[in-house]
Amino acid sequence: MKNRVSLKTLILCTALFLFFLNTSNIMANSVVEKLLPKNPGVTGWQLTGDHYYYLPENLYNYINGAADLFISYGFVKLVGAEYASKSGRQENVIVDIYDMGNKLNAFGVFQTKRDPESRPLKIGAGSFCSEQYVLFYKDRFYVEIQAYVSNGKGKDIPVRMARKVAAGIAGDCSPPAELNYLPDAARVPGSEMYITGGILGHAFLNKGLITDYRLGEEVVKAFVAFFPSRKHAVIALNQYKNFLNESGKKWQVLNGFGETGFVSQEPYHKNILVAQQGSFVVGVSDLPRAQKGKQLLKSIIRKIKKPS
Picture (cartoon, rainbow, N blue to C red):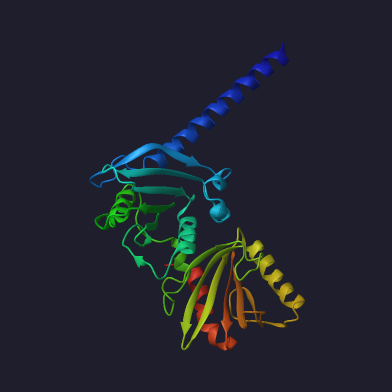
């Protein structure tokens, strides 16, 4: 009798779990779906057909070559729609909204797509456009809008649709708070990148920020690698030292920078300064002389201790 009651209880609990899981997925989809306007805000254009959805397991069916990039940045789901002209001409606009889970991930994808030659816009936290597309990010969402418009008067349609979508996304237009770890002075605007999969090509520096700084006539790179804890950061620093040892490069202890650090030459990155501070590993690379990067490294460590 007890076994029969336990089995019924187990079946009931499982059914309730699946019900609430399915309900939460439906609600999550509806939240993103609401960001696609039924009225695109452009006279003579309308939504056609149903919205389409993609998850990590089937994103390859939509953007085969680029799916790995999005998934590496924490892709959650995509909701998209097509808008068409009522004029009868074969013109349409595709709007794809990628839920990247958080603002830093959305920023990371946006920066990999960013074309420095394209015209910047004041949409969301960052945006740019050409005659055929608009790309922007705001909060945890990265948005791509592609236009297939032949009429010269319709060239502003993707921009107008982008503004409409951005207005429907809650939150402000500020960049990720993590960018505050990077000092403003001498930083090359637009060079900031959020990397997943290895800063400077090193798997032990899995995730973090990297950007360019102009020191006099030289452009160098600075990075901030994030770790779950101080212990993980210390392990990563030791792995860096082991890499240099195996590469035949000598390293020397760098005193007065973070909790511990070193200076060395690195294959492909000239002189490099690296330090561990709390749950971070930070560094300055591509230096013509190690001495030239010390002030920048100190500034980064100060920002990590007390980000603005």
